[in-house]
Length: 262
Image 1 (tube, rainbow, N blue to C red):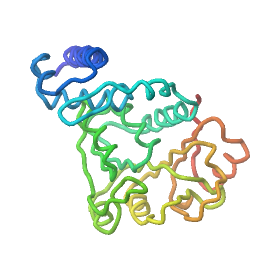
Image 2: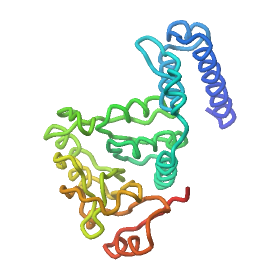
Image 3: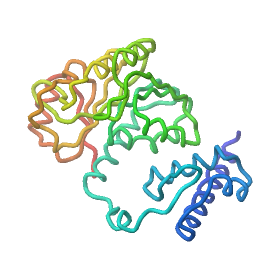
Image 4: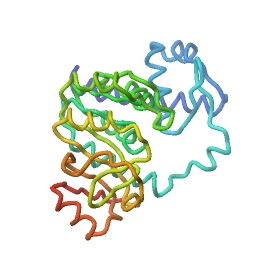
């Protein structure tokens, strides 16, 4: 497909999604089957449209279709500062990804915020242990190759964990791991409330670069479980709220620190 055809396809997709959203807001509910017939496209394409719109917080998916957002959710949906920070961190992280890279995206809201930023990347192979991340990846027009490790479902982290997942990750070789954290111990590394840290450590061992995405207000949190020690971390991406002293201390452990501007 030529560049001009790609641009036209993108415009058509944006217009179709705009029209779908307009119908949802007017009618309150739409079905995949009716939309596919109306726009003369496949049900698979419509499902991707609805997933993308849900990811953007514009509607709610339901079996066979979608419904409009309840008014109480709409009233609360103004972007808060933490959401803005997550988006800026995610954008900075996405700039480190090259076409055809093989990457892991761990579960978490900040890592999930990267997905829209991957739409322009070509030939990506992406493994994730999180269903919400997988669904968002499937909504991208560039259709990256998706890998999931399987394993045991952990409701706390909303992701697959355990030995089966670890074995699957070890079977591959990755360029980059993108992972969040519940906290940052300036002297030791990333920390987490979750005691299931085995898969995170295997992910770090299987990637040439380990890139941590975390907001600056998580620095110094008293969390017992060390997840990824600094000697296994390549880069930490945070917001501009990190102090210069903290940044210097982390960099002394050999970690590159990127402070995304909000």
